[in-house]
Image 1 (spheres, rainbow, N blue to C red):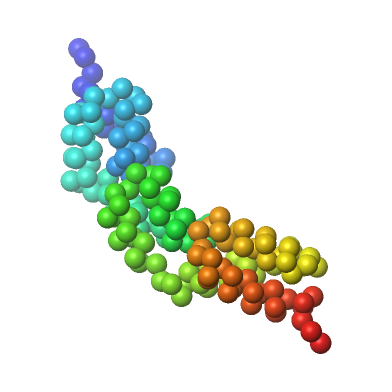
Image 2: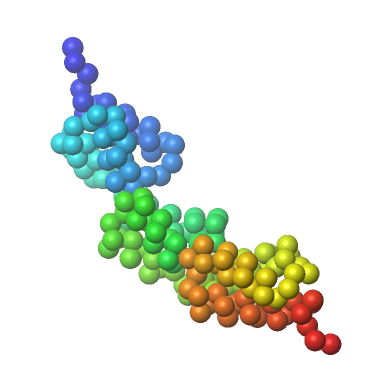
Length: 162
């Protein structure tokens, strides 16, 4: 007796979801890699969506929150992460709208303050360049980054004028 392709696809999806949360696009890709026919993948994922096991809206919200806290990523970098994970543009936009601009600025300040400890004693231009690179990689807008960096460098004990 041939194994049921729907059951095999269901098992693949469940195994993927026990490892980590995934977007529908990631699950589709995993099924395709395992040779699952597209119509079977679609049927299984539709059913998983109906019962709430596959939910890109919840996934996008979770990804945004965890990457903000864990990695300190800003809106632009989070948008990139969501695109990489195959989250629909509209769902991604809605998840990104939940980001509080003041909280994002506070995260930038925290990241800069932590990094300043390891840059102590360097010239102000070197500190500024390194901090700007770090915040740019994390997706912070340049105007916000420069404002936060200038404040931190100006307040650093080695640059204060007595």
